[in-house]
Length: 215
Length: 258
Ligand SMILES: Nc1ncnc2c1ncn2[C@@H]1O[C@H](COP(=O)(O)OP(=O)(O)OP(=O)(O)O)[C@@H](O)[C@H]1O
Ligand SMILES: [Mg+2]
Image (cartoon, rainbow over all chains, first blue to last red):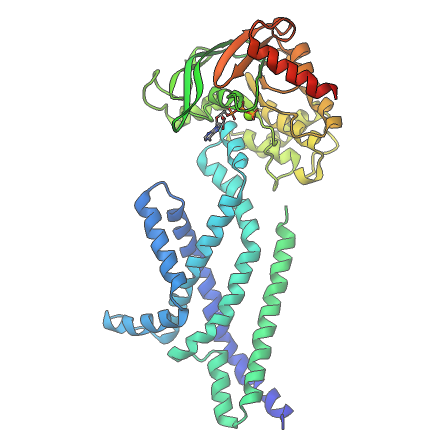
C-alpha cells in the first residue's frame, strides 16, 4: 500500500538535499558559461591550433558519459595530489562538461547570424570590438537562451549522477530515505516530484526570458 | 551640402579561388554623379561595388577614393592599417539588397549606432541626429519601431538613413529595391532620387532600368567579369553598340512586357 504520510515526510530531507542539486547544476552552468565562452572563442579563432584544441575539448566531453568523467575526475584528483571535497569535484566536472555543450550552442548561434549583420557594421566603419559587443553578441545570446535553459534542465537531471561520488543531492538523499523507511516507492516518487518542480520552474523562467529578449 | 567623392577604378582584378570574377576593370566615377552598374546575374556587379569600400578585397589594380588608395598601403602592397580603413569606410555609405538592419535595435537606434560608435557622438546627440535623418526619409512616425515592425520599403529607407546620417561623401547601393514588393519600390527610389539631386556621388547596382535611364549620369555594363561599356544612359540603353548589351536589353524588355 502506498503511504501518503511517508511520501510527504520524504519531502523535507529531499528539499534539503535539493540545495546540492541546485548548487551543482547552478554553479555548473555558471562556470560552464564562462569556460564555454572561452572555448567558443577558440573554436571561432583564426588560429588552427586553437580550433583543434577546441574541437578536441568538445568531442571528448560530448563523447564520454558524464558518469565516467565524474569517476575519472574523482579518482584522478587524489593521484595528482589534489585533495578536494567531492562536491568541488562534482561542480568542476559538471562545469567542464557543460562548457562543451555551451560553446557549441554559442558557436551555432553566432554562425546562424546572417553575414549581412556584420557587413553592415563593417561598412559603416565600426571597429570589431563594437560589432561584437553591439551587433553579434546581443543577438547570439538572445538566440541561445532557449538552448541554454534546455542545457540547464539537462544539468539538473544529470546532477543525479554526482550521487556516485557521495554528494548528498536529491537522488542520493532519496536512496537514503528509502533505506531508512523501507519505502522506496514513496521516496523515489518524492524525488521525481522535486525534479519535476525544479525543471518546470526553469522552463517557465526560460519562456519569460525568451519573451523579454525577443527581437 | 557635403562635398562629394570621386572614385577611380584602375585595372582591378578579383578572384574567388580560381574563378576570375573581375577582369581588368577601369572605371571613373565622377563626383556628385550617379553611376549605375548593370549586367546579367553573376557578371560581377556586386563584387565590383564591394571592392569600392573594400568589403571585398581586390587582388590587383587600384581603387582610389578622392585619389586615396583604399585597402592597401601602396598598389599591390601591404594591407592598410585597420584603423585607417575604418576611417575611409566611415565616409562611404552602403545600402544592401537585404537591408541588413540590426533587428535588436529600433529604427532610431539603428541610425544612431554608427554615430555613437564610429563618430564618437554622445547618445543624446546621436539620437537627435538619427531622428532628423529618419524624418528626411519620411519615417518620423516610425522611429521607435524595430525592423520586424516595418515594411520592406520602410526598412530600406531606415537603412538609407543609417548610411546618410554618417555624412558620407559617396553612397553605394547593391540592388536596393530587388527584395521589395513592386508597390514599395517607388518610395525607396524617390529617396534615392532626392539624394542624387542633392549632389551625392552614387554607385547603384540595379535592375531598375527606368531608374537607370532617368537618374543615372552614366551606365556601366558588366558581363562575365568584364566591363563591356560605360556611357551616358541614352547611348547604353537606346543605341548600344555591343551585341552583349543588345541581347541583355532584349531579354529585359521581353521579361517586362509580359
Ligand atoms: N564569395 C564568393 N565565393 C565564390 N564565388 C563568388 C563569391 N561571390 C561571388 N562569386 C562569384 O563571382 C561572380 C560574380 O558575382 P557577383 O555577386 O559580383 O555578381 P552580380 O553581378 O552581383 O550578380 P547578381 O545580379 O546575381 O547579384 C559570380 O559568378 C559568383 O558566383
Ligand atoms: Mg549582386
